[in-house]
Length: 269
Image (cartoon, rainbow, N blue to C red; front, side):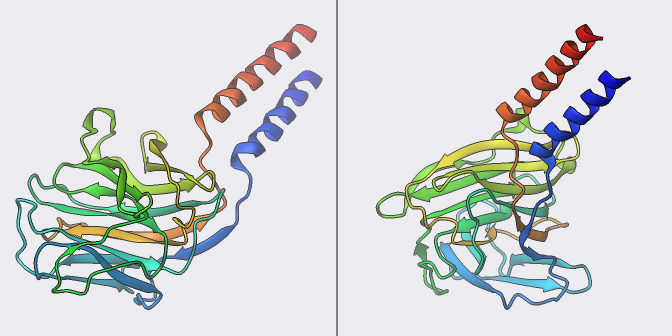
């Protein structure tokens, strides 16, 4: 009995390293119905169309959609970010609940991002061009039913260092099980990108290493509204907290540590 109590105590202590209490640095459930705290910027525009956005006090969600007819061939990109004056520091994780319908050929992306500034270089519609730089984003992709990500860095800030159009169907759970996206900052130059689902919890997509340590000075929402998205489309519960995703090695060491301690106590008993 004594050995069992010792083992239980050790499990609790070890578990604190993974599931300890965390502090929330930023939180918005959009129930105020206001986006006054966000700066909307255009990063890429291939036509004169714009987009509407808002926060619904009744549903407590952020929404955005294209104002024009758009194009299903992907030629009319409208990449935008809504940036808050809050940073993602080392040891913190940016999370949000994200929902987006799935329609083949309908190009609409929606997710979260970190940028080097709340007021980065941007376009003023109806001007066209591209100024996407020094930012990282991860997003749901309506057209493919997958998850995409993008990162730009470098001396000019526009060097693409990571990109995925979303062709990861084979490693993904069912689309309907995805409940959120996250970006974790594990060092001044390292970010983990992933998603949350009801099947396996937090899942790592990729690791991004940057040179510009200002990336992370602003957090927010990313969208590419080349066409109107498929309902439901929303972002909710945008937050930054000191609750980093455990690295796979940490989890493995914890499991083997507990197993080894159990065998040791069994031999003693």
